[in-house]
Amino acid sequence: MTPRLSPVSFLRHCADVASFYGFVPLREIEKGISMRRGRGGFHSFTTSTEACALHITTSKSVEPILTYYATTAPTHVPPGISPRDVGEFGMHVIGANESLGEIVLLKTMFSIMQEWGMRVSAVRLNAVGDKDSKARFERELTAYLRRHLSELCPNCQKATTSNSFEIYACEQEQCRGLLTEGPRTLSFLSEKSRAHFREVLEYIESIGLPYQIDDLLIGDEREPRIVFSLELTDEDATVVAGVGGRFDEYARRVMNRKDSAMVSGSLFFRKKGVTKQNAPQPQKQPSPKIYFVQLGSRAKLQGLTVIDMLRAAQVPVAQSFDSHSLAPQLQCAREQGVKHLLIMGQREALDGTVIVRSMQNSSQQIVPLTTLPRFLKTLKI
Image 1 (cartoon, rainbow, N blue to C red):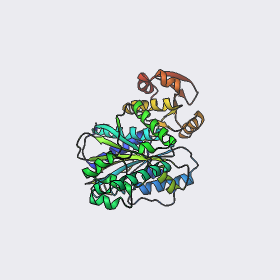
Image 2 (tube, helix red, strand yellow):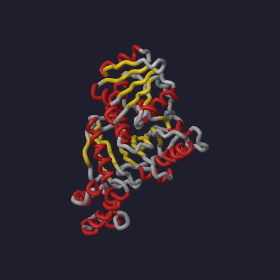
Image 3 (spheres, rainbow, N blue to C red):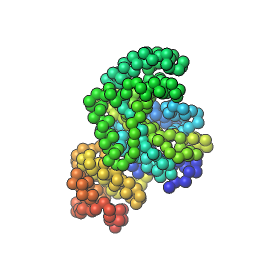
Image 4 (cartoon, rainbow, N blue to C red):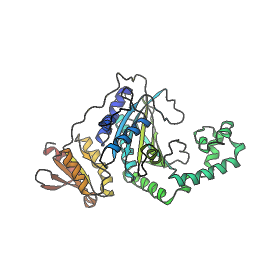
């Protein structure tokens, strides 16, 4: 458990955990980009997304980007939090259309909080869906608010005439109560959006994260398809909030590509004491000697448990969670010069085993997950 010493310690801790789960500092993404977008080593949600967009246009890689950034001037903060008082540690998963993008990000955020000593009682979620889903819901919400306009607080009576979603930022009891009786976004999801959200919930259940649906979790101007917020149980001198979502529409506007996909999460902390001079700089991580190949959704979910196990044993591992076949993962392993592969398919996931293969001579053996860390240490990895 990391001692709760300072915001600087928290940032170091965030970077350490995120790196183990495959996230790299944004400065690594910026290599080869002619203009660095951050100021004084800091980035925001907007500039980090723009940097990733520039990287994608100049890179031939089709693998998802997992990256993190930090800033003392966040551009998007949860309601009720002053941006002047907090800093942000943000993470992006860009290029992952499937729901595993949300799961990898949520699992990383949970691990950061858990190892810091914070207890997360649940992750609250809601889905607004794609553009058509949102448009259908917005029409119903607007009509509902017009019928009950006199019951709204004065501020919402004015604000909702131009933007119906403004009411979700209101903390007045009369407005919150009215919303609980109003239309729910989940009732207006397209079949594709409904299937994606259902899969996210199933995956969250399968990895043992507690969750609850929150119909009032709406209102972000970046138009997220899915929104989530970590329910923090304990008071903490540093950590304030953890939020995120799937921002495919936002990514498509920035990247000007119809197939763009983006999941992002942010941990907000009290920034007193953090300056450009003392902010921790991302440290170069040791190159992993192992590449973890996962084939099929069951293996990818079980793989998160394997990553947890290897982190506890301090065994660095590289992976590509969004690849669907063996060939591209083997290619990544060769490019990274790893010595061994861990291979998990559907059979191994069911049996609780993993195949350990040597990249040198292709010799391999099946190892139970319960003994994997000890076995890897015999390989002097």
